[in-house]
Figure 1 (cartoon, rainbow, N blue to C red):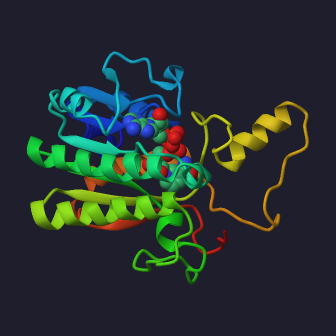
Figure 2 (tube, helix red, strand yellow):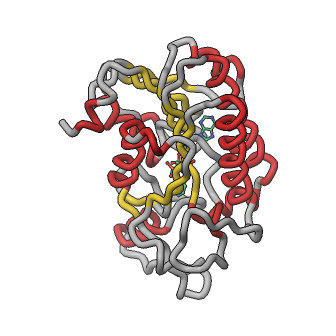
Length: 260
Ligand SMILES: NC(=O)c1ccc[n+]([C@@H]2O[C@H](COP(=O)([O-])OP(=O)(O)OC[C@H]3O[C@@H](n4cnc5c(N)ncnc54)[C@H](O)[C@@H]3O)[C@@H](O)[C@H]2O)c1
């Protein structure tokens, strides 16, 4: 087993949003890396229980990251690694429900950070950020971590960026060992099609139905598609590299040819 996977052996890990498209793959990888316990906190608002890895070292807690009762339940398990992936996904959803977006993606993130500080002994808090939430549509190419856009166009982007900023606060003020990651359009097993989901599962769905693929927007938009296993690998490396603490990093395949 690779060294960076071995590092999770016998550890207790909390994955918020662990039933989701990326979280389910991450939780499985952690469980297969022989983590002592992988605690999944997910309210199944955007996922299904069949997506949860059915492995003996996976503990599923159906709950909400904004609920103190549910947070106390999972922190009672004494996790030392936290991967925070739960969010109100994604752009159009947040345009339709901006208050819900703020509650889940901002308040939920603050609460989780707060519980992590109170718990103590957290070795890594890995935040799932988003490329589109930092760079917006106007960023100079290639997209570099140090660039920040002030021209974000959806509540989702604003909340995901705020999540990074709150991570900075808890890192600087409380020394919480935060790693900030920025994903670019994940695809792969574990993602379901749907009104608010990414293009690839929806295209697969329509193709399997023998229907034409619906093109939205100008038809010229591009995305940086990243296979979900590459994202989970990058997340797992967060423990391996101490110099990742306090840093932000793109997890992408080709960040230099992207437009919204
Ligand atoms: N998929 C992408 O292309 C992409 C790109 C950039 C960033 N991200 C970020 O990565 C993370 C994971 O994305 P994903 O594609 O797996 O999304 P997803 O919607 O499949 O997973 C998110 C999970 O969070 C859960 N959830 C939502 N609200 C919750 C709440 N209040 N309490 C507990 N659980 C809750 C959902 O039920 C879902 O299982 C998100 O934070 C997202 O913003 C994803």
